[in-house]
Image (cartoon, rainbow, N blue to C red; front, side, top):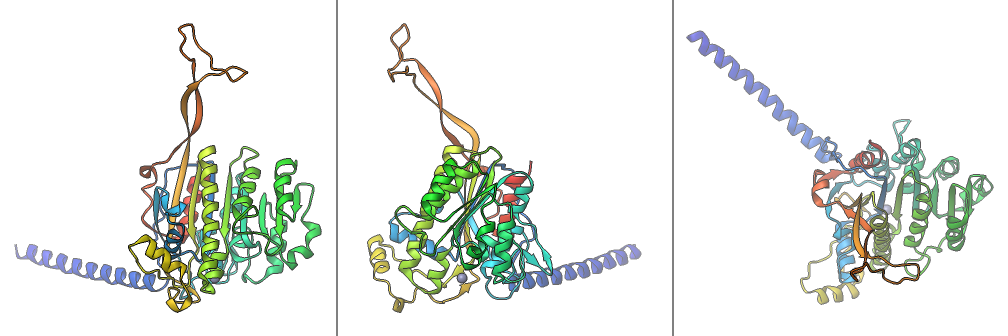
Length: 423
Ligand SMILES: [Zn+2]
């Protein structure tokens, strides 16, 4: 009896020690991850599969940027209407806030690295989702509103220990197998122009030639490198237009594709605390999201995911309930209002927003017509009805709700890999 009591006591002591060790470990882990780089460590699992994935990155676009966009347009921006959304943690291995290079690397490769690195960590190149997609025979497109050698586009196609190694990034872009690359050129790229056009690849330098070439060329690949200032926020020569051209080219054959589109200048406008310039970039980016949603609805079998690499400017838009008062306050905004609280990146979470359509076609019954467009009637005098495909069914919330509400930026890579590259 006594012995049994002793045993129990020993067991209890053992359990107290085990529990104490577990507590200390958990607290240490929480402190470590909390201070350094928050990552749940658990990759989200999504059962959904798609032929095409479009990733849209608003550089520097935090929640309050979107709030300002909503006030300015008088309605919710397109991404906020998507069925599934949540938050993304953006920290890199460098203390403080991430830069675009480390954040794009996390999304492109699923690996956290240090600021300044381009798909690269500790002396090693990291394989990107774009490279994996190409290896599986998928088409790949990259579109940006700034120079294509900049951090975000570069991190999907090239590898560098320093984001400013423009020479190396430019030659890697030209050597890459990417199918579509649209954005601004620079001196370094123009100096290598004779290597861009090949038997397989067209080289365009204007919106018009991009649009014409996409429709008429027999070549598989295209680079469109525009002069600074060529991409407008409104009118004809926009990011949305470039993106539509990219979608046309990437879907010309049947393999399926990965497309990354960056609204690059939301960030620079926010560094400058320039509200109007930020809104112009954001609203143009929003129109691009709408163009992608439209394309996905019309073609099916596509996921559109919108996110940001980090927040820029520490923007805090005050809550004003009355819509017209809020609009007036935004219209009258100047920097003395101090809605922008910083001129640098912050470690604040950003959003993720997902819109997905399946490959299930939706049929609608319509009246059959003859060659002359006249309605055909049966012997009873009733119009003959035929089924036509009118669209694809949108994925409802339930299919994608297994994605946690808060994810890490490396999870963007995991999700795209599952949707696009897992059978
Ligand atoms: Zn920045």
